[in-house]
Length: 426
Image 1: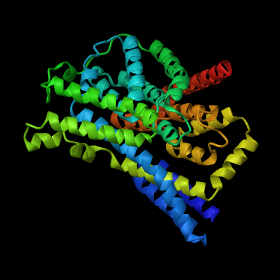
Image 2 (image 1 turned 90 degrees about the vertical axis):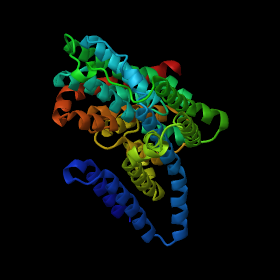
Image 3 (image 1 turned 120 degrees about the vertical axis):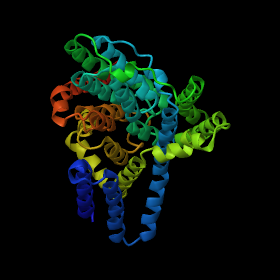
C-alpha cells in the first residue's frame, strides 16, 4: 500500500511540476493525486469507517485554509475592481533607477505582508509596466518584486499561504511571527537590493500610457472607501482571532460580509449593470478558483500520507540522519524552489506535531521564513515568481543567471540573522 501511494504521489508531483510541458492544469493533477491516494488507502484497509472518519477530520481542518483563501482573494479582487490599488501606484513619481528600485522593493515588501505575495506581485508588475518602458530594466525590477514579495509575505500571518497554514494550524501565533521574522525578512530583501542597485544607472523612461490622463471609472472617494476598508479588514483578522479565539477564516468571512454590505451601499443608486460589475458576485467569478482546488488536491494528498503514518516515518528518518533542526528547515526552504512550498509545509505539519515542537517553537518560525523565501531561488519556485514569469514573459534561464544568486544570498542572509537573533534572545 505505502509503495503504491508514494508512486501516485510522485507521479502527481511530476505532473504538477511539468504543468507547462504536458499542458495539464496543475489543479486537475492535484485533485486526481489527492483522491487516488485515499482510494488506495481505503482499499487496503479493513476498517472503512475509520478511514472515512480520518478523512472527515482532515477536511474539517483544510476547509479553514480554503475558506480563508477564498475570502481573502475575493476582498483583494473587490479592491482591484474598484481601482483601489491605483491610489497607491499613482503616487510613485521617482525616475532615478537606484532610488526607484528601493521604493519598489520596500513597497512590495510591506504590501505583501498586508495582502499576499501573489496579489502584490500582480499589482507591482502592473505598476512597473506604467513606470518603465525599457524591457531589460523592467526585468530586473520584476526580479526584485519576486524577492520582495516572498520576503514580505514570510513574516506576516496573512502574507503567504504557507505562513497562513502554520498560523491556522496553531504552529505559530500572529504577533510573535511578526516580531521574530520581520528583521530576517528585511535582510532577505535588503542584501539583494544592495547588489542590484549597484548595477542600475540613470533614469527610467515611463511608458506613454503612464503619462496620459485617464478618466477614473469611479470617484476617488469610493476608491478610498473600498481600499481602506479592505485593508483594515485584512489587518484586523489576527486581532479577531486573538480576541475571540475563533479560527482566522471566521474573522475574514465576517470581514467579507461587512465589505459586501459597504459595496452594496456605495452602488445602491446605480443601474443593475454597473452594480453587477462591482459586486462580490462578480469578484467571486474573477478569482482564480483553480488555485483553491489545487490547494485542496495537494492538501488531501498530504493528509493521506499523514494518516498512513508515512510522514512520521520520514520525520524520524530526517531527524536521525540529519539531526540538526536548522539544516532540515533550510533544506525544506531550498527544495521549495523546485517543489511548491504549500505541500512541503503541509508535509512538515504532518511530520512534526505540536507535542514535539509546541507553538512558536524555533522550528516552526524558521520553517515559516525558509518556506516563504526559499522559492525565490527559481522563477517557478513561488506563486509570485510564476505570476511575474507569466506577465513579463521572464525566461527561466535569464532569471537563473541574473536573479537566482541574489535571491540565494538574501535567503541565507536572512536565515543567518534569524539563527543569530534566536541565540541572542535566548
